[in-house]
Length: 222
Image 1 (spheres, rainbow, N blue to C red):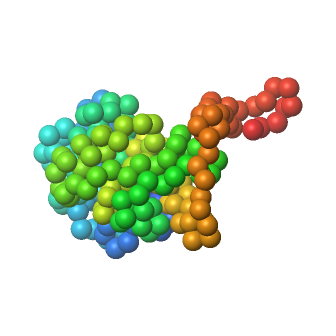
Image 2 (image 1 turned 45 degrees about the horizontal axis):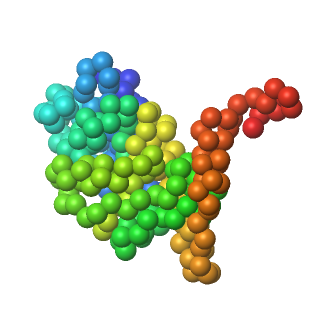
């Protein structure tokens, strides 16, 4: 069942490795099928080099395995709780990408000191409180942060990103690591200054609503 979605979930997980956002068997990506309510998720403990669409696991909204010979990711309960709380979501990713997780290790938000952060995340990228692995508390901690950022750090753990598609969730996962690296380097050079809220809003609006569209007066792509 859900053969097309299993293929896409497998490819999405492999993208995490290609972008060096995961190591060994860590991290995971899932996607929700809105028609059945099932989610397809990476199996637990499988190396990315060994991953195939057939090894993806299908679970229902309660976490019961519907199809698959392997156990689902240990983060499955967190994914399910986030889908239940945020009906617009179609994909969730968890990584331990190095620079973003370094911020999580010290329990710090990534400040909105770059236009790229304002564009993609609409403000600072929050760091949620610590929550134990494997249960619903991770989802609760993420939801407590509120806001519009598609990425949330989890204190002393790692990174969760969410999107209305696999591509959107992957974009957030790639971008949060990219900006985290830049900000970490900048902090070593001196004090970083957050953008004014008006500039954050202007950049977020431009990126969300006009970036990539055709400018009729200029005849060029923005």
